[in-house]
Amino acid sequence: MLDLSWMAWTTPTAVFFAVIFAILVVFGILHAIRPSFERVGVLGIPTQRGDRLFVSLLGSAFIHLAWLGLVGASLWWALGVSLVFAAAVFRWV
Amino acid sequence: MDTKPVNQRAWLMVAPVLVIVAFSALIPLMTVVNYSVQDIFGPGEAYWVGVEWFQEVLRDRRLHDALFRQFLFSGLVLLIEIPLGVAIALAMPRSGWKVSLVLIVLALPLLIPWNVIGTIWIIFTRPDIGLFGVAINAAGLTFDHTARPLDAWVTLMLMEVWHWTPLVALLAYAGLKAIPPAYYQAARIDGAGPWSVFWYIQLPKMRGVLTIAVLLRFMDSFLIYAEPFVLTGGGPGNTTTFLSIYLVKMALGQFDLGPAAAFSIIYFLIVLLFSWVFYQALQNVGRADRAGGGPQG
Image (tube, rainbow over all chains, first blue to last red; front, side, top):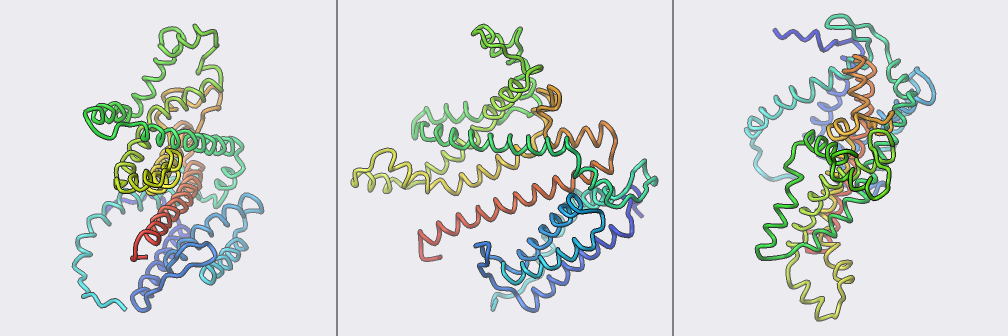
């Protein structure tokens, strides 16, 4: 068995990657059941469901960073803002 | 609906790539994320600190300065190299033995290893023995890239432009060569001058390759490390310390793996954001061309 102790896993980071992985799996399955179609939203670029997921995740990362830099270390509100942002992206982008 | 036959065997062909990506990108990236929330003293000696490193890095004035310098550098690179590259491509011969000669001369800087480029320019700009340094000092101008920040920037920009403008020129030249002669004939019949030909035929036809050139030059200059590290080492002071130089100082110089990991993630996110924006621009340039050029839409 590989010794992976140098990767310094922690429970929160493992949960983080598990959630990301689970989202990707769910979207993969969703794509197989109900393929998404392309549309042009408020950004003026054609996007599919996967594009909107990418924008949501990248935007959420920057929302969390902005929260850390401007507000404080408690990130639950940032998570909430990110979820609202993601909902908006899936609705309008 | 998709009516093509489904053949899942193609996934087997993708498997080696997935393994390579996992080893070269995913596992290191996951490790960086793990390190960014801990204080790392060595293997098995890590202490949870939460988002402390991120806060520290986000409030680091030197990081803000390095980020500003990085954007300034990349912006200047694009502003100089793209128009200059296009101008060189327009001036290049279109046929005959001169083409080979010009292509070889243009390609030379691209073939030199990046750290050697830095060394070449150190010697070239030395005020005592370097051709450039001696010449400019003889002209009555004080020039010393080791002591004067502006001189260091000028030297860096000259080096960068010398090194990478040929790539833009070669891409633009390829775009120019791909324009069918019929366009020029039509322009001649319409009595279009050189400026109209450039503005209405050559530039639109080069849009695709120029977007690639912008993308490549932005990414490369944003991640630049070897040349400024060799030429100035980030100095004088911190005036040419770009993000990657600062990152390496933090990670390997001070062995602050936690803050360096947090810094890397922020750096990665910025690069990811810009890559996505440029990628979308690239895709939509192609789309607009297709919509205007043919029935495919």
